[in-house]
Image 1 (cartoon, one colour):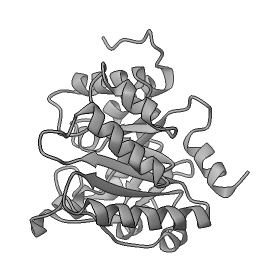
Image 2 (cartoon, rainbow, N blue to C red):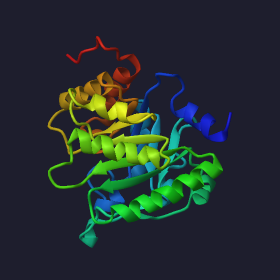
Image 3 (cartoon, one colour):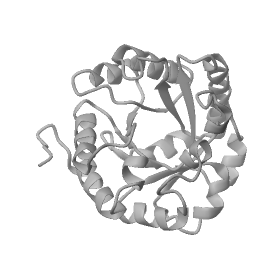
Image 4 (tube, one colour):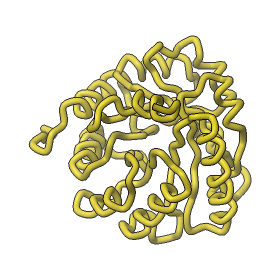
Length: 256
């Protein structure tokens, strides 16, 4: 069994295992938004609630390393842009796999936005990153989003984006949820685990629970949700509800 296979088994311990991951990379793109002002207490609250993987940029590791529990997986995000530029949809590579390994990463994360002028350059970066992660035995999670106006949640476009990411070497894909009636075609388009993101801030905790349930019902292998968790009023309690659903969900599960 290769190093990458061992690390993937930690992410998904069983054939139907589910990953509870939270990205905390928003502050590079949008600044220190609500919930991300101080990372150390947030990381403690997320882990108290049952989160099993956290994703940060390399510099943030120094803020959270002492708060990480032994069983918490660390993903380091290597794609960057800011809203200050006027073109935050074009993600640029901002680090190496070797550096992430030195920092203690369990997996590598990057982002590709499809349907924008910088798509070609991002795909080129992804191809190179897939080669580096394979050489060092590191799983590669790709956040694959469609940013073409009016197509952001179109099932065919999302399926195309996820398949493109997988074809270029992604081991896990995170993407937007297209709806309970259509997301199955996204799952069928790829042969790697698919995680669902939270998207825009939802109106209520019950909407979040419904999103998680519907994602699992259509075949998602977990979630990678940020703002809808770290901007809640009671982070540990909300996470505990989500963790319980991830661990116990079956096709007969319903959210009351």
